[in-house]
Amino acid sequence: MPLNGRRVVILAERDYEDLELWYPKLRLHEVGADVIVAGLGEPSYTSKHGYPVDADASIDDLDPSEFAGVIIPGGWAPDALRRSEAVKKFVASVDEAGGLVAAICHGGWVLASAGVAAGRRVTSSPAIRDDLSNAGADWVDAAVVVDRNLVTSRRPADLPAFMPAVIAILAEKSKPAGAAADARLLVDGDLVSISLSAESIEYMHDMLNRMPGAKGYRDSIPAADHDLTAILRDFVTNSDPRGQLEVDAAQVVDVRPAGDGWTAQGSPRVLTVLEGADVPGIAKI
Image (cartoon, rainbow, N blue to C red; front, side, top):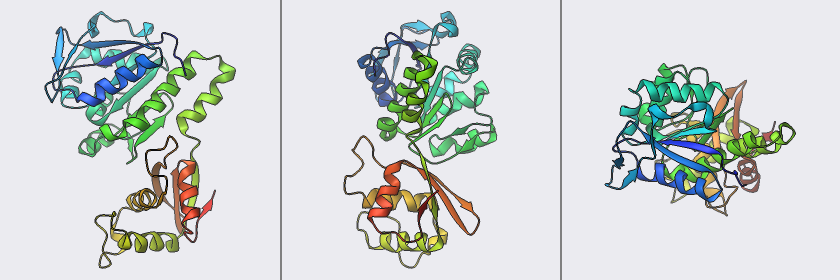
């Protein structure tokens, strides 16, 4: 999926999270993007773990209209970035123009301060869940969440889900309007909705009690005392014979009440795993 020189800013400040800056930077280079690392004026920044990155520009000197997107890594860097008026203006301008805005881990702090989180579905490090909720966002616990041009993830381990969504958004913006639907399918991961019953939940909970790899489940703790999204995610993760390293690995977005049961949203692989495990009381909506 070549990006043909699409220009993307990655924000940097001291104590950035190493993988959350370098993984996107190198991955975007691989697919042909022109990546600009921009900070608050210093020539270089050192990560949480002591790894430096050179800045290509100061954010004050960049015109957001010249860029297809902006990526905000986590670590402690966002705590400084969110205080910069230039950063907030840049992120808000890219969002207003429909360009890619992507944040991972504590990068969500910048979304809140820039005013782009309100009314959007997002995820982040659980540590800043309240910050985003208080900023008006609909927070969910998922490896990647896509809301139009906004892509968010929780932690470095989510990068294999984060970057395909980032690249798909950028590719969509570089294609003619008639080709946008194909990219949107890649971004959304062709999400499916699945109805779950009380029998479904109890079955998965009972099986998790028996799985050595499932932590935190005991017969003495009823299913109702667990987060249902976590039950589904843990069951699918431990039941998928192909594991989580596949390109189309199962991704659970959330589980929400619906009538007498619940509706789960996730990738098609989630439904495949549930059907393969003979979970009762499920149906594709």
